[in-house]
Image 1 (tube, rainbow, N blue to C red):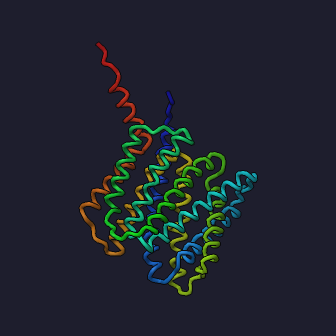
Image 2 (image 1 turned 90 degrees about the vertical axis):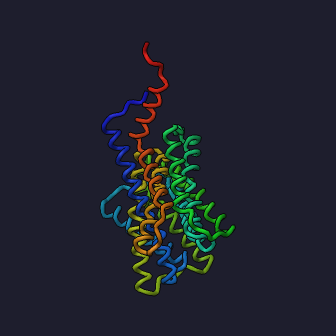
Image 3 (image 1 turned 180 degrees about the horizontal axis):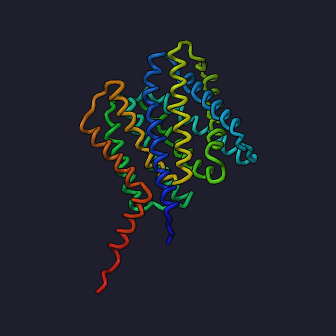
Length: 310
């Protein structure tokens, strides 16, 4: 039986908290996307500025701190490959919004915890426990309630966000492997190089890569770089180093809740009972996915199956 210590419990709890915080900040991306439409920024312009600035800031920080960043050729290729995957996820998700409502796109994107749980069970030998399965079902049910209000629908958009979901699955699973040997900040720095190259190539090929031409556009790029990219990416990666990929993927389903709350507060979107129930379900899934709670439930279930002393 695995022995747990206060230190490992604290690390797991910290990991969950970091992923939740990262997911909350990632939830601002939808708001930035809405504002981008108003200032006339294309997907390539928004994402190109976002990742170029984030890459420059992160590598500058590593240089100032004197952090060792050398990787062997194989690890370097893997990190850049994960960056390409993350770039594909970002591009396909944002482009899908031309055909889908934000709710439908978010709902389809956040089917990735199911995929991560299955892939992790096969590739990383992470067991699919009953508490984790309950958390997964609760999370997906909550996301369906929160994000299922959208009515716009288009097959091209559905295909694009489906690709985004698959790419997010590959990135989450691959990152769990990489952070076992690569410091989180170094991992993110190399991933950002791959993302920037991917988004830039897309913009050049489609002829949509350009710099913002208004102060509002530059402010938007600055905001999405810091609030929607750098901080959540670092938090998510640091959390992933402390908890299993499948647990992190379930906990991060709290991201749509942030989008809904910000939409209500900043954009005046209506709040309904369905959204309230869905939000409660998402928060419940975060609790269920906590390693401490999961271990307690497993212990109770195990004790319940043992025969009583006569």
